[in-house]
Length: 258
Image (cartoon, rainbow, N blue to C red; front, side, top):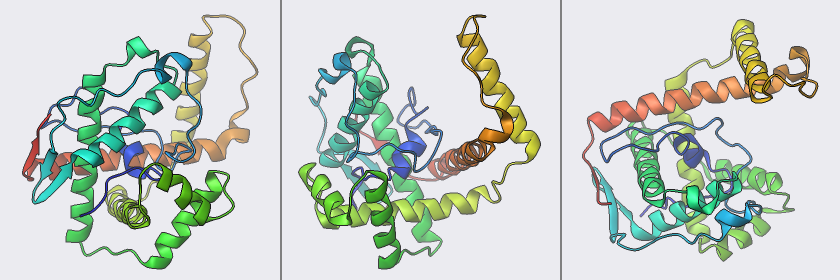
């Protein structure tokens, strides 16, 4: 059985947690800003004090949370993902009273369903991942979390209840879904005009948030161009993932039991 637990890279969770809120059991998944952004189950340490005190409501969660074609998404998989997303909501500054746990549960379930659909599609297309690919990804994730070795990363994830086999399975799925999403997205290199439009939108938003008051110096376009390019690429990938999941879900047998 494949694991859907969170690993440091968190590609799939990031692709599907941002706007999945409000989706029904037959709804669609949203897309976050960036796959491989610096969010991790191993490295996440900070959260707002109010939301951090809110414990996950795990009452009434069935043994099989969802079924995607012939694959069951189990309670342990769901609980791990849901708990991590609750912590992430806290880390983003939401207060304990502002977090709708029922909505967050649906979001987590849709995230897992979207992940499974992408993994199944990757296998259908004959995509594969090597042991070397998994090793390189674990090494990169360890470095991103300030760890000296993959052994440290594995130890941190073991404390969260993940076995080495589960970790490698999850990384394999992340790489498979990255392949299938990249194939769907095609060339994501943004044009200069796309970058300039994105930059102008960010500047306008910052000025609006300042309420007409003088804002801190905004870096010039040329200085932040590399970061803008990465963000726009990530948005295009996320949009491609969303489109693909919507298309796959129309032809899949999906049942969510929440």
